[in-house]
Length: 360
Image 1 (cartoon, rainbow, N blue to C red):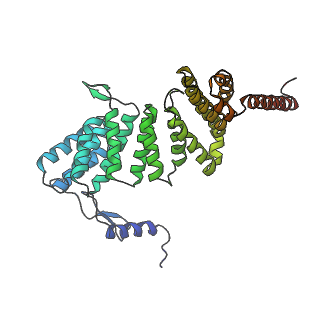
Image 2: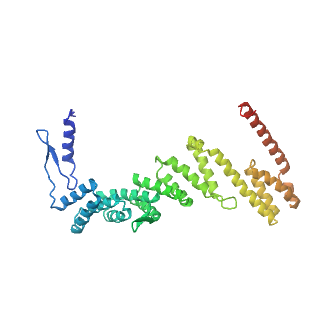
Image 3: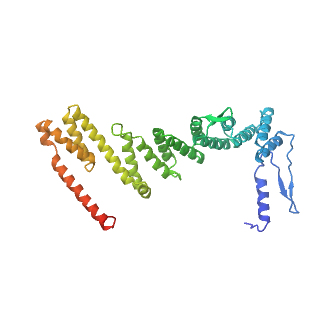
């Protein structure tokens, strides 16, 4: 292998690159002469379609967006059958996007995405669509009569879905998936957020956003819970995900207070069972009420709802058939035992606080 040193390393690398890679559309080519001067070997002819498109591209790069849009439009009008037509649409769309005419730019990006999936402009068009989708998803409105007053959330959602469909498994699709999940989460569309974060975790198990997706999924599950009188399946799923997080990411679980959240979930689940028991007792079904309270005490013995359930059993027991009463647990003994244990724990907690000097 020949080692190249000094200033000529870069020059030789450029020469090698120019001999192995085709020139970009309308781009001038330079070589290094024997006098160490760059010489143009292929000047762009401004009278050719390639030269005219190169001028439009250069105008865009220089920041003259209105003129670049105008030049690209003229080129498109006179060169509809030219194989470089997707590049022209991309230039015009970029010029519109740079002028913050996002919605108008999307028509040209879509022309490229739908009609030229094999072109180099295809991926660039999808990247720009993703950028516009993110702008819309984060609150930017569409223009109407020169004022930004139209909600663009539907466009954001559609674009983020399209990017994933058109480039599945890509880094861009991964970004779009996370953006869409966050979009649902920020808009409190928690059922959709649950679906999207679940899809993200399944499709991108090595993503740098995996921890975020797991935590957000738990939050979305919890947010679907509206109260003990409603469906509690979201709480069950959140508890399962919290337990899973404790196993695979214990540090993250501690950081978000997973143990405390699990305890609150258990209390909510217990409250749901207590409400069911109270309803059965209200409709004069003491047997169903007793069975429900029995389940409550067995599953959540340390909950406040369990204590309330035992108090309710004092009313229910006299209404039960003798055969049921004979098979029922000793609720009073349970109540005394639990009350004694809670008192002992409270006393132990007070001693710990005093030992730490937090109380006098």
